Image (cartoon, rainbow, N blue to C red; front, top):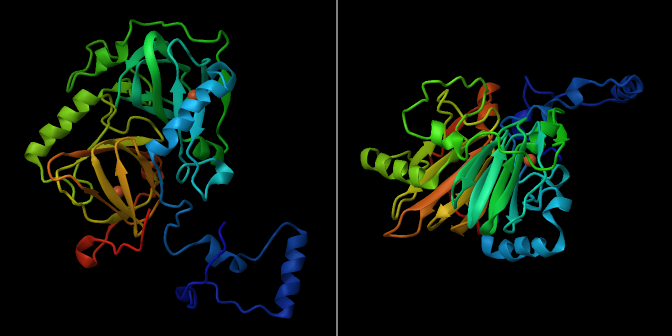
Length: 376
Ligand SMILES: [Fe+2]
Ligand SMILES: [Fe+2]
């Protein structure tokens, strides 16, 4: 835990206000001998007044990282690396290899004709395709072709491997996983697929072709899992959906025109631990600030603008990635007067909601906009 900063609110009945004496110090030592302690010595520290983010607001600009992601192609083979991923490390989360909070993220590059060995883990995974041609994933035998800005699931416990077809091009995608969460809960595990890459067990693209039509469910549907049977959410349909919704809504004051990727079977989040959104900021739109529990990692699908996160302004453009730590004020703005800007994001909201921890608060001062204290 970070060094506790004494809060003036701690100086009241209801919080620990014990003044240590020599007798108490001796008592603490005695308790320590038996692997025990006095709660009032740590209570104010372990019970913060408000949700306390453990990550820094951070941006990873694609122009900076792309050459290094491509360098990895020559330095290690996809097979040897297992996953040839440059991971995005929050400055305050190095110990758990997290991008933000308990979420992991990275950029993975693959040459045409390459593939990763099949494997599965208790952690859930998702992908957001950034560039290239011919990328595919196989999830529990379902082979799915992937294009730029497609959002793809590899839910927890599913066998999966990825690759690029022989006639494809070098492809880069963003990975998002809840590895740090699964580890923190001491629930993660990993298995290697026994025969290298998986065999395709179903017709190509059977998941999006069965479940990808809006408002339609296959008549023989018998899906039993807690995650979505639709594992590829294509960009074209998503963008069309946002544009249609924009015709009939003022949008959210905090997020513009925002839609949640959903499990068509349940209407709920796409996976049990991670959710995802796509949002559109209309030309010139600047949202108001709010904060909530849960960590969010954003990926700029298109356009250019900036977000103010914890008072720091981060300018972004297409393919940049940035994060909003839990309970940190944030607002977004589209800098173009003529083009929309779209943000993909994924989060740990399903966990917050299931555990009863989800909270949200609007920023009420200064007409909803934070004072900018720094720019990065
Ligand atoms: Fe994986
Ligand atoms: Fe938000």
